[in-house]
Image (cartoon, rainbow, N blue to C red; front, side):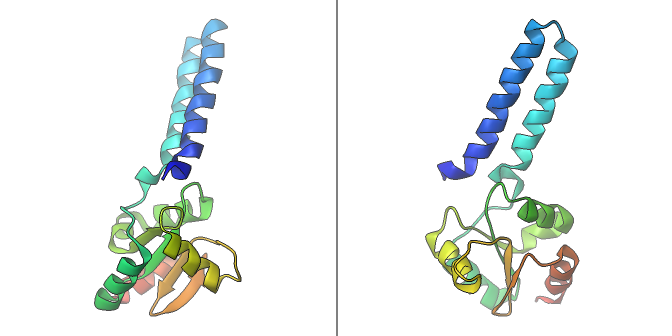
Length: 145
């Protein structure tokens, strides 16, 4: 859990230090703008941007019942963020598994990616797809029950 928050915390810390330096240099406006940019970057890279993660087993069971894809992801992954943003509101219809929180999810990803934890890995109908196009995932979601 803590590992997922390291990048956002580092971004907030760096932004705070840089903004403090600008305040002492007399540039309060620039400091506020810089701090805002760092806070936005921290927010985008935090687990808060993604729908609530569940365990790999539960995600697979739910997917079997409702036919929706399972997305294995991790915080800080730009490709996962791209998928999440491009899916928009539909992202909450998928089953998300944070591989840093769920060892079974990480093992499932390593199994289908030659031992690598390459994410996003999307499982549709029992078949794994590594870093698929968001439009393709959206089309698979529309076909689910």
